[in-house]
Amino acid sequence: MPDKRSILIMLDPDAQTSSFDRVVATDAGVDQQFAYANVAPDQVQGLVHGAIFTRGMDDLKRTAIFVGGSDVEAGEKLLARVTETFFGPMRVSVMFDANGANTTAAAAVLAAGKHVELSSASSPTALVLAGTGPVGQRAARLLAREGVAVRLASRSLQRATAAANAINKTIGNSLVTGIETRTDDSLKQALDGVAIVIAAGAAGIRLLATNIRETAADLRVAIDLNAVPPLGIEGIDVTDKAKAIPHAASSTGTIIGYGAIGVGGTKMKIHKAALRSLFESNDKVLDAEAIYQIGKSL
Ligand SMILES: NC(=O)c1ccc[n+]([C@@H]2O[C@H](COP(=O)([O-])OP(=O)(O)OC[C@H]3O[C@@H](n4cnc5c(N)ncnc54)[C@H](OP(=O)(O)O)[C@@H]3O)[C@@H](O)[C@H]2O)c1
Image (cartoon, rainbow, N blue to C red):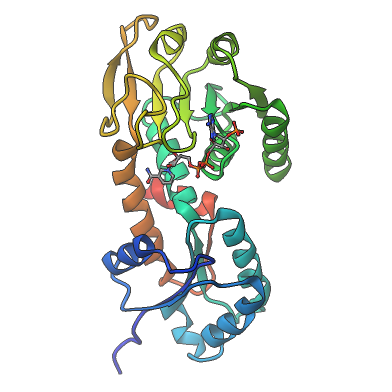
């Protein structure tokens, strides 16, 4: 008997299953997609039972679940129901990447790590601008897990502090600090001593102008995840990938810059590799950290 075909059960809280998620699943080589839209948490158990009670134990690894769509919070609730439904060996592997939040954050941190050693020994400081969104929070979490001191910025000190506290609680350290960056002066202060900037603001929002960026003497790499003009970091183009960007305050006269599409290639590779890895065993739960580890191994 040939191996059973790979099946990806796609759970999406949106009205239509994401075409993006489906294209990537096809390109990753999934044989069959079962795509469910408008999925509410109380519908998850039945769908998971359909996945775990059909194939024999040896073939369970040929069935996997992907939780996607555009609403990260709604997706997190679906993921929680999926994992709660598993018991003992009765499980299939699952990947969570609603709105590309995990793969994008992983790709951004991997890009930073190519130019700055991410470890508690070297103790660099990173600034995540607009870090309260799903991508920014995950980037901050991955950086802090590597031992990096992170300033998580927002227009609101309250939102920044709440996000920072939640991350510190999750990972059991206090490396993330919430800060407010509403004014040019607060931005300059936030950049002081920072080696890495990741701009994780909403699409079409400029967060960092060149004259402010160039006050950061220790800056080595700047990564902008916003692909919609005006871009998040002035002077970094959407397609820049490890490009030398003029930076007067730096001793070399340049820093390394990445735009959203420059990071996007790695993001897509991570997404496909993570999907393929789902079919290696029936017990994987691929959230931000596991997806980042897959990115590191590529
Ligand atoms: N390259 C890729 O493949 C890819 C994939 C996914 C996402 N992305 C991009 O990554 C970025 C982050 O995604 P996300 O979903 O985490 O973003 P998001 O939730 O839409 O926004 C992130 C943060 O931006 C801040 N913000 C919103 N409106 C603002 C405004 N008018 N002025 C200043 N700040 C504002 C908010 O922070 P505060 O309210 O706390 O200030 C918000 O929490 C987006 O640009 C997205 O398009 C790229």
